[in-house]
Amino acid sequence: MGTEDRAAAARSIRDALLTLPEVEMAASIAAYASLRSEPDTGGLLFALWKRGTYVLLPRVLPDRDLDWATYEGPDSLVPGPYGLLQPTAEARGVRAVEAADVVIVPSLAVDRTGVRLGRGGGSYDRALARVGPQILTVGLVYDAELVEALPSAPHDQRLRAVVTPSGGFHRFPGTRPAT
Image 1 (cartoon, helix red, strand yellow):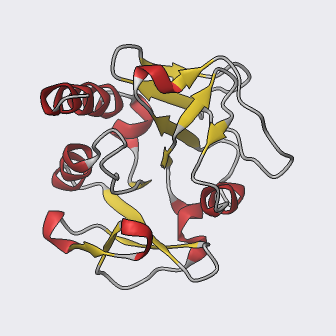
Image 2 (spheres, rainbow, N blue to C red):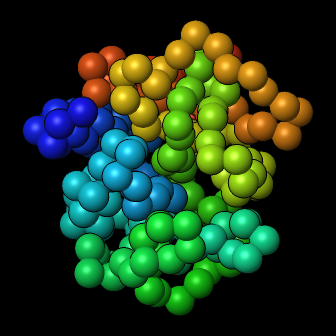
Image 3 (tube, helix red, strand yellow):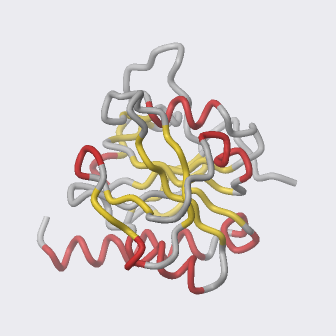
């Protein structure tokens, strides 16, 4: 995918997310700084931060669990383990994700039932296990990464929705918005 296509995909995903009622009303959102192979989250993080949303980003701990810290703008990110960018702010603890109104999750692929393929460390499965059932958990993937079916294990945490550049926001069957 070329640079222009990647930028257009990132804008489409950002715009679809920013207009979701759950995202518009969220006081706190847990998200991530994307890797080059993933849909770019830089514009999304900046837009959320500028409109006053409290944005938490992960820090990978030695046991691969996720600690969380506040995003304080693009200059507040530094290189961390596994080539990830992480925030420089004070760590809030692994349970900080519990307070998020929305959790945006990196994914290599997502199937049409919410099964997510991650990078294999179990970091997000542990974090998502701490998130309440009413909280929107959403994966961001390119169009070709939304697939019919993926294998899953008992510890895998299903997403409640996905956003793709062409398809926009899609909520999975059996999930509903918080009331």
